[in-house]
Picture 1: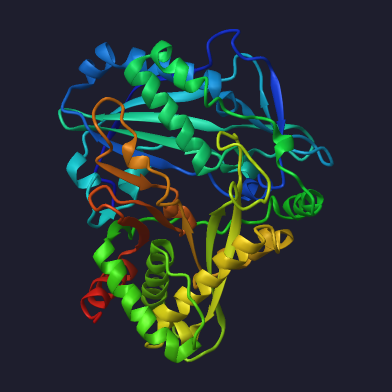
Picture 2 (picture 1 turned 120 degrees about the vertical axis):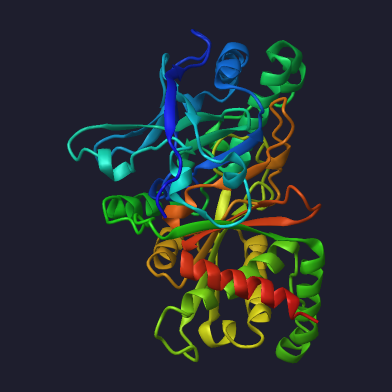
Length: 465
């Protein structure tokens, strides 16, 4: 599918924290940050109804956008800084120097806003011009010199008389989704109310930067650094052909979750006896996605479905409440762990596939609850196995992060997309805008596989007891 939109860039500028407000700072990377050096930038995209012209935006809103972004960067200054990769054996780190900034692009689009912000199939290339692009780390890496990479870029695109989109590119090594959500909420509140009115609240919840709060009691840092240096310039397993790819959003509502849960419980006693399964909304949704996704992919692969080879489901799990010692909720950085569930092909593709999937994911979460860093020395190698095959799946995002409450004065977003899944092949998850307790599922697949997934997803729900 060829792109149907045209983008006109109206302005490009750099936005820094207020002059003289932040001292030069170096932040070391913890062992929880290191694996994210191997991942491409995350690219969340927010659509808002905005029935105004580009000139109205530039004359009445743009100045406040820049000012509020600058004020927010005063508190989240690492986002304006750089990722520094020095010559080996020195360690990469984050650095902020006075004058560092975030790139801000203002653009206008002639595309169909309502189509782009919908839930049905849309060409993935139609979205790439709506988010700023960042080079992969390997593309700028100098073997004999220090390399520097921006951490955050922002693009605002106006759809005249219809809407507006705000797209981001963020290097995950700088922060997890919790931290970035805190930044976005701070920016949105300052934009709506001004910094002075928000200061009393902000001063009670100041971002926390002391990296020593993350304790490496297992000696993971040198292990992960060694793995990263050995793999930094290996070919990245990313999709780069998009002509036949589409993206769609599916919504898993509570009634569907309850029906799936009932089916799982009705079969689990027969399969696993009295074993108590963890059946949270997240586990239920992920189990159903895993089976539908695998079946859709297997339709296009000539390989026996009876084989017992392992299939993996990769996900991330919050570490703030699992590390066993206090970490401030305002900590700026990564505080998440990796989970990898495994089930056999014949189990997943059989009539009880969802039950096996739920047990595998639930058991992995239970293991993370018991020991969130168990097997952490294998995080990088485990994820390379997952990314090295088209028959393993990863999910990104969390329905616990309330992104649909991000209000810039025009109400919450009409739609949220994660654009990076086009390249990574991951499935994105976030809370539902329309259904209380529901989960939005974002996929980007070749057209034939997307159609197969759609049929499997919808028909499977219809056929549940």
